[in-house]
Length: 183
Image (cartoon, rainbow, N blue to C red; front, side, top):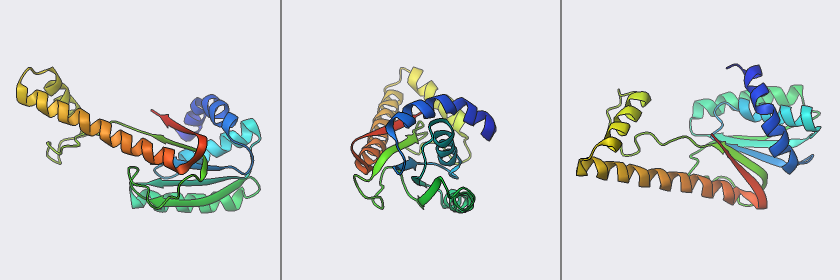
């Protein structure tokens, strides 16, 4: 799906849910936002559909290469669209430890939380994600006590990882403001 197609899919949800929570000049944060295109698209939708201007955009991604791309993208876009688009900062960081982000700052924060694949590191590096998922499914369906223990530990790791991530997102928004977790 290209940018325009995805924007069409996201338009109604973002305009309604995000648009009801934000107003001109608010501060928005996207966690684990890759190269920043989704955050830019979100601000475009809010500007086009709800007339919301001057949102200040911040975000982060785990991979420094993505952060470099995002910062270049946002620099260019904020120069071209400066009348309604404001860029704060895009940093490299781990979603479960946003120590570099102050508490109680943002009017809305959002992210995508995927499944943690192979949190225990039981598979070799050359095993792709689809195969890892298939092998974990086989372990889930096994009656072997060792397999059951592996699955239970994996589930606990999933829950702890997601809880840390969500806790950080809650911490960085102002009290009573919205955190959106998309899938």
